[in-house]
Length: 291
Image (cartoon, rainbow, N blue to C red; front, side):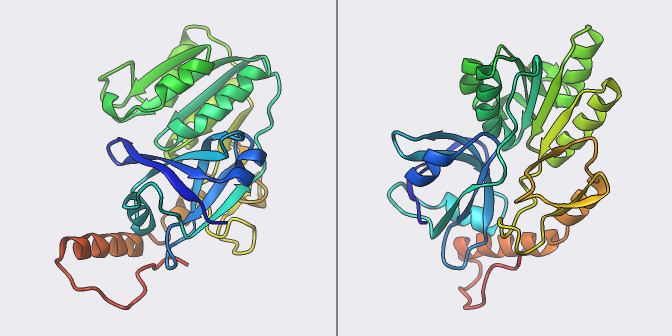
């Protein structure tokens, strides 16, 4: 399924909001699911968490970082153009029910992906506290949307330029020291943030779920690249997840898989940037290096 681009704008440095025409996906989308986008005929299969959808308008929304060749290509595309391929909604929806007081933490691309989660938990009758993390104040985005549905929004920045100094983990610890109690936690975004936040909630016995959306290539369980150990058992992030128990995930394995092709990905990205600048001549060699 090819999707026509409605919007593709930069919202903060290096983060873009992508709105695609995809009526079939919009009708079936649920919180926690993701899509896979291929920008052109030689592009990678890039997973994006769904950040919103409108069944009436037939559109879906995702946020993405320009982090490699395919996202660089996508960032150059204009409204009216169509991506080469679009698949979704993929993954198992997040289990939404009334827990009591729910903590939802997001950072990086997760600032967009946390919005449908916060909305759904609130609609289920929970009190929802949203923790939004960024390196500094000017990289926080989607705050207005989250404030529309959350009972409380707390900003945390690594440099202390706004809100609590630190990350989602530090914000959770500060709230816990105040005597705040949480019945459930859900983290989405940067892998490191999800890991340390899960480790922080574990001593309190808080059921904690993380979204392992970054571990995708095929997205349908065929390639096996998204294998992850959860509680000592092998799971596939794309079809068994992306949501997993954050206290049972083998985080060392997750980081090892994410780092597998970093040198090749960086080389391909820099090559394309140089070619755009005219520093190197075009080559017929396939640019993508990731399987």
